[in-house]
Length: 115
Image (tube, rainbow, N blue to C red):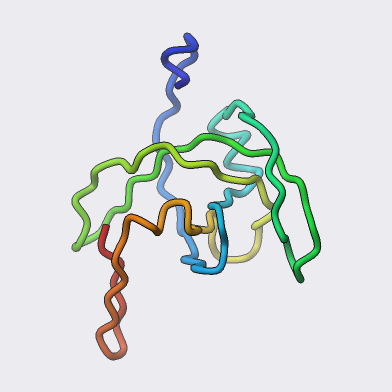
């Protein structure tokens, strides 16, 4: 989308993410939005913290999951709402908008997410 609009595609950034099967869409920390120089693609209506309605800005992002069990292929563009995640130990929340295409495998004390 950025390339079609004549904008530069930002270099990838590796971040820690939280898998949240209850989140309808993904979320990214507002610092990442600034670092990647993302362009807002709209506004979303989400339940937010403690189910309080919120209308965060939304950005189109591409996600590549890396690890032993991943093929490192980019996922199709998904919508991600901006959120304040600083200090949480992760910079992104993987919600249903990207998880619908993944299988979650649990192996005792170890868990793995397979795209």
